[in-house]
Image (tube, rainbow, N blue to C red):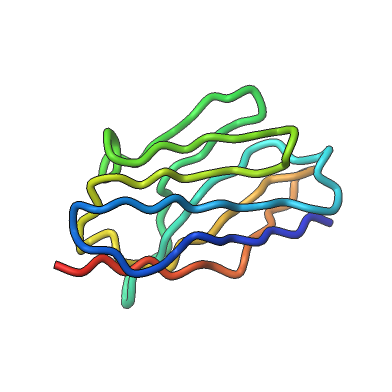
Length: 115
């Protein structure tokens, strides 16, 4: 079992920055890929960015050049640095981990970008 706890969400003006953190606990040795997803009201949950155990990253086209995902394996934590935020980035952001073939989700953290 893996538990994920996100933090760092909040309200920010357009053009501002936020840094999300996701701390993993439990069977962290089994974690492979970690990632961030988001879900806006009335929309499907979508991938924002992911990072593999060896550091390889995938970024959504909508956040490329603005968001950066990183991972600290010693702290079992994944980060999402979000710069140049836009109102359309407003959503609940979820952390996800893949471990031993299972998917684990955090509870989500709200990010609201005002225009």
